[in-house]
Amino acid sequence: MTSSPHRCGFVALVGRPNVGKSTLLNALVGQKVSIVSPKPQTTRHRIVGVLNGEGFQAAFLDTPGLHAGSRRRLNQAMNRAAMASLADADVVLLLVDAARWTREDEVALDRVRDAGKPVILVVNKADAIKPRDRLLPTLARLSAMHDFAAVVPVSALKRENLDRLIGTLRPLLPEGEAFYPPDQVTDRSERFLAAEVIREKLTWLLQEELPYGITVEIERWSETGEDRVEIHAVIWVEREGQRRIVIGEGGKLLKRVGRAARLELNRLLERRVHLELWVKVREHWADSESALRQFGYDPG
Image (cartoon, rainbow, N blue to C red):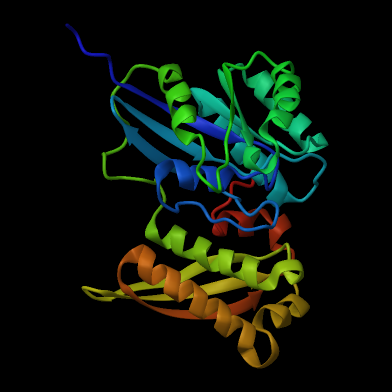
């Protein structure tokens, strides 16, 4: 009796901004590799999260939300990152919200249709539809929009029905050996993850005051002992007024950001972290090719 061949492939997580792609990625791989916030377009880079199971490895590509109509270079770079993931993927998970369908969902579906890859429609936040039989007409309507390989309702936040999703995905992966070692869960460096954690804390603490033109750069990273790391990071904004918002009265807000980020980085890096933050102005960086390259984006 021969055993089943090993399967391995790239799986693009695609959908409109703020539909839950990063939450789903973290739930699937079992730990946080992509930051999450209530703000749209929190994810700006392509991030790989690796899931190893019995006889398979799925390398999930968390992508920025596909959106239309933006002229800013940063948004264009984010759209390119999402489209590159679609081009590289063996399978696509198209994530939509069970409660509403928007113009940006239509944009995402159009891009998925054009890619010509096997697509699983993942209907997120299905737990919010009560009673559950109210979900059936929505699933029927969405199923008719494309020749999906499967339609799977889930709750990414509550990690409901993920086993079914993984079971549906596995046979769609191509046969092949694993791309990543079994103990690797992401392709991103600790420096990248640290910058993302800082940006996440800014997003949560600033909420509606958060400037769009904000990014984080790790300026210095020093291993100062077996269990200690010193990180110096710059928070870049586009205007002096934004700098004052991020610092807060008497520096209070920046201190809160630093403390929240340091506590999470202690857990993430499994070391004691000394974190220093500065806020600097670089006008119109989100429309500057050189600045986008410096901060790790592909300006095209």
